[in-house]
Image 1 (cartoon, rainbow, N blue to C red):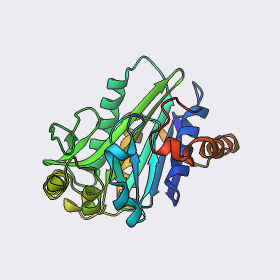
Image 2 (image 1 turned 180 degrees about the vertical axis):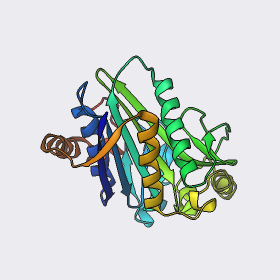
Image 3 (image 1 turned 90 degrees about the vertical axis):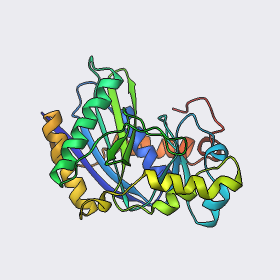
Image 4 (image 1 turned 120 degrees about the vertical axis):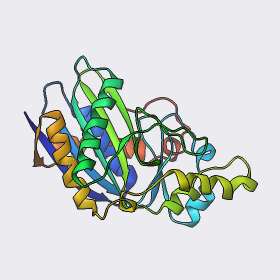
Length: 262
């Protein structure tokens, strides 16, 4: 089977990147070619659909450090991004596979990919108050979390997207999290920092090395030959429409809008 490979490496506006992510998913029709997309963000924090920004992240710290706030249309927790992490998503036709099985297959593809660059990894097995680790959505190397993921399903299509720490600023990742009491800030930041790691802490690789390994690992696991492609005109139009009506608004990004905007 042939699939589409979208190499949108760096988008300066994280909110626009999320609009593209949703547009590609919403435009997908049952039977379309599967899609594997790669992208990176400038410094930003993306919160989950069910979160409220002021409850999850330090907005003052973000403003002082020029970190953009954005909110995705899938669940999960707040995630710090910079050009040191690699984001990627898979969109494919719905079948009889439930969402848990979908995550299991995606994890298998990631683990296989990381073996290509010499890193042994596995689905997450730890749980910590300061940085939740979920066996279904997270990938670990040793005792450290190196990747988190989220997903969505609708009639005709499934989406899975993930953020992998390659050489991310982990100190800043720890600092942006909201703390219940300022006197615990240093302790929580330290605990968070100790639970996560970059891939480069284990192996000497570049972003491109990781991306190429993921393309190979996903191709082999999903039995799909991903061929480089570009965003279609209809996907482009939908992305800009979603950005203007949804992702560019403070109501959406702060988590103040509970009704989905489509």
